Length: 387
Image (cartoon, rainbow, N blue to C red; front, side, top):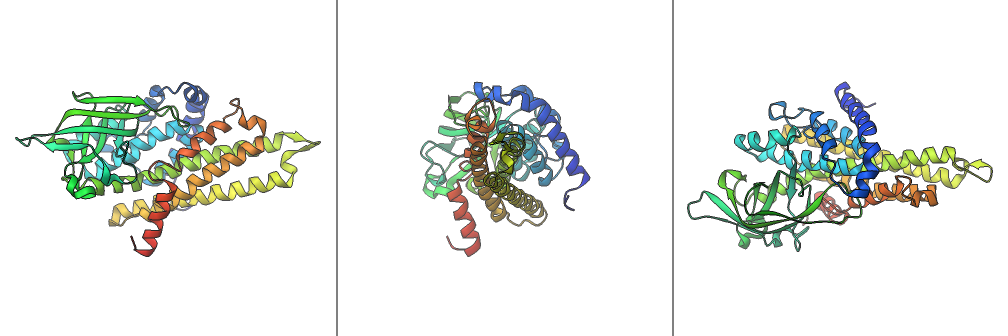
């Protein structure tokens, strides 16, 4: 294949493909319909190492690199993007931050159980009136008089896995006067007094990936659960989002891959006017363009994965590569799934086939972890150095 994809990479890719097709594909439609969280399957994914692929073995992970992670993500998302979302949050948004910014004690208490799949992790930055502009968040964390714990109050929204999460990395204000510079990161234990799970969001897609608000009412967070120093939260959040965008880009490739494969099969089987529809030039053009965009997206994801691995060795940033991969792959997924429904005609619009689910799942990849508009801004700023 490529010289940067080793036998170990291929092994985890094949393991993920086998698991996804045997364990996830048969249940994907059911969980999409009910919106239930697929906890049993997620536990199995943890046992196989998919929930902590880049986490060192001493902390309960597999100890592989980002390339292994994206290869596995693509295969899981080809079967069901909801399972992929849960996997992405665990790996990219929760574990990645802890690996780089957590203390040894925090890694033992929070990273080990999440990386091994025994517990579920989540990440919370967004608020009802604060999305891309994190500096306007209204939630607050105030250090108590004895300086032993923080009192957290406020509401966070659109928290993936919140309804089932055991631990959540939460970003909130410790000094509102500094705006972005006043944000601090905390590790929240969801079984403590003062934490409440809010309404579960009735989503268009990735419906088996539970999402809800979380509410803090005088929640006491021990100082030792602060991740990094006060005011470092925004820096941590951006670093984690760079990693997360690679996971979402891989998710988008998986969705697009599934839609393309279904379209090729349908074009080979479906007949119209006495011919296979794959013999018609209009269908051929669609399939050719779909294939080119999917493979271009895959290469951008690979490039981002390699950049992240290089960054771990050198300390360099991989913001540009992650942004390009996320932007192009997500818009490709939306476009490819739209074309796939068109190729399938009325059957593509029916819930009897998974095409409409691919279409609904694809849309969110253009929105979460930085919208396409934000990605274009990030890419342009990386190119010009201007803000």
